Structures are given as structure tokens and as C-alpha cells.
Length: 189
Image (tube, rainbow, N blue to C red; front, side):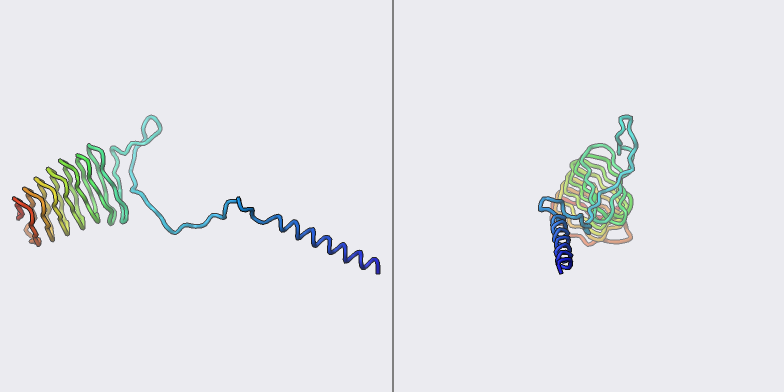
């Protein structure tokens, strides 16, 4: 009977020792939690850049590509090339010469004296003054600035609130016009 009691006591001791060891293996409060997968993705416009002699890159000769849900702001003077890949927003806030290829969601021209050429956009907003904007197609044009020269071949609607703007459109489609500004000229050309 003593042998059986020792064996039971020994087994109990081993089990208690294992339980104590396992209890010490838990995560401490200051341990980092397990990483989790994020379902939210934020993407940035891509740039075709060229290498520089100091190991960096220069986007000057490259093209910035924006896709749906992305925005690219042009804040530096000079020449900029942008491609909209199935959407994307382009905002021009610098006195720059900007060429935009592809189909954009929104193009905003807030600069004073910029030159912007584009292919297609859903919304074209010209809030700055003294700009020259030329494009192939825009569904809606909002002009809040003054003294802008805007030519769009296919234009569905024009909402002009600024003054002394010249808006020319093609002959294939006559846009709906709401002109609440002063001295604006809107017509075929």
C-alpha cells in the first residue's frame, strides 16, 4: 500500500509541477499582441522615376499615375505629366504646365495662371483665375474663378459663377448652361 501511495503522490507532484510550468508560459501583459491582418488599404499614386547620381530618384521626367480613389496634387511650378487609370483626382494648385492622359474622376484647377491639358474627366472645377484649360471630354464644368480660357470638345453641363471667363465647346453636343457670373462667354468654338 505504501508503494501505491508513493506512486500516486509522485504522479500528483509531477502533474502539479507541469501545471505550474504551463501557467508560467502565458502571455505577460507587456507582450506585443499577435499581428492581425488589416482589410483597409491606402494606396498612393505611382511614379515612373529615374535614378539620380546621389542614389535617390527624380520624378521630373516621369509620369505620375493615379487610379480610382487616389489624388495627386501638383504643388510645384514646372511641367507635370499625369495619367489617370480608370479614375483618380488631380488637383493643380501651382502655376504649372500640366498634361493629364486617361480618364479622371475629378480635375480641380485652383492655381492662378496654370496651363492644363486633359483627355477625359467626370468633373472639371476651375476655381483659380487666369488659367488656360483644354480638354477632350468633361461631363460637368464648374467655373468659380475669373478670366479663364476653357476649351472642351465634349461638354455636358457648365455652371459658371466667376467673371469674364471664355468657355468654348464643340458642336457635337450642346451643354446645359447655368451662368450666374458676369461677362462670361460660353459657346461653340
